[in-house]
Amino acid sequence: MRRLFPVTYETAAQASGGGPEEREVRGSAGADAADAPGEAAGADVVNREWSLAELAAAYAYPEPAPGAGAPQPWLRANMVSTLDGAAQHEGHSQPISSAADMRIFGTLRALADVIVVGAETVRQEGYRPARARAEFAGARTAAGQGQAPAIAIVTAGLELDFSLPLFTSPLVPTLLLTGAAAAPDRVAAAEKAGARVVVAGEGMGVDPARAVRALADLGHVRLLTEGGPRLLGQLVAAEVLDELCLTVSPMLTAGNAQRIAGGPAVTVPRRFELVSLLEEDGFLFSRYRRS
Image (cartoon, rainbow, N blue to C red):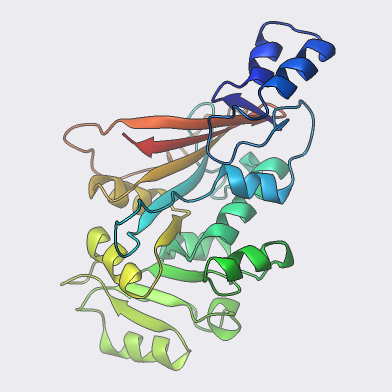
């Protein structure tokens, strides 16, 4: 893993062709001058697997501003795309992923209070409950978080298999974000299975802005969504997405796979700002925030 942006003494030395000795001197000189959140001295060494602590620092949620009052929700998305824009291959994201991508995937989950996902993605990807990870236990305790993030499923019809581990054996109860007009029998079945049903819309569907507020009211302010494309498109259209962590896979698939976000186009494209860019084995790991 190496950092390509923001540029540090180490990345500048690599770009200028500086030898190992020059890179060592520049890295040492810049050890106290890192300008990126979570920057660690020497983090840009080529062909070195970053520790989970380094990844957690690089992807830390923004700290609330002094005097800002109660923490405000921050919604980030984590998606993967091929060079030609495919978010999946044969209906799954795993074939276009990598070991490094999965390390970042796991780290982002460990940093979150709740993972928001669409019902179709739950069905296609075989979602399971988030697990507790010993490597992050201390950090989660210090941040006032539980042992694992909750899974929050966005679903209008609640047409889910309540015998799945998401409902039978989660460390924390699974949340179902739905509309006020959801079928009472499906609501009752969900609650009987141990899920917590959260109304976040007036009709059958879910209002993204209301869903974010409802999760914040439950104490979940570090929000992570893993899609799928339809859900991400709704979040983009509602202008509630604060950050996009996008893995660009060095693969070409052609075909008719979905993009990372689907649905109606926004009236005016919203510009995001590049915060960081990492690379490993040809995979690019970008992080963008709303500008």
